[in-house]
Amino acid sequence: MKQQPLNQVINYNGEPYYDLITHEKDIVHFYSNSCGPCKMIDEILIDYPNVIRVNVDEYLELVDNLNIKCVPTIYIYKEGSLTDKIEGYKNKELLINLLNK
Image (cartoon, rainbow, N blue to C red):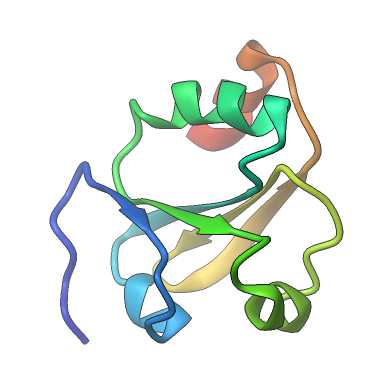
């Protein structure tokens, strides 16, 4: 498994999903280009390392397999295991607290 550089936002493009989950902590943002709240979350996530963005409109099979029901949805992995799932828009302060725990 190839280690991705730190502090890099990666746009998912169909590679094996779990090959991207390689850090101590990875944040996966499931979004749609037509989602206003998703764009606001992107502005917050830019300050975090190891962010993977998945466009739900382009990768329907992955979204279905991961049981993503709404956008925005954020999955947080620690040491490769899913530890938190954040669904829907959260205000900036609450989102930052959830991301930092």
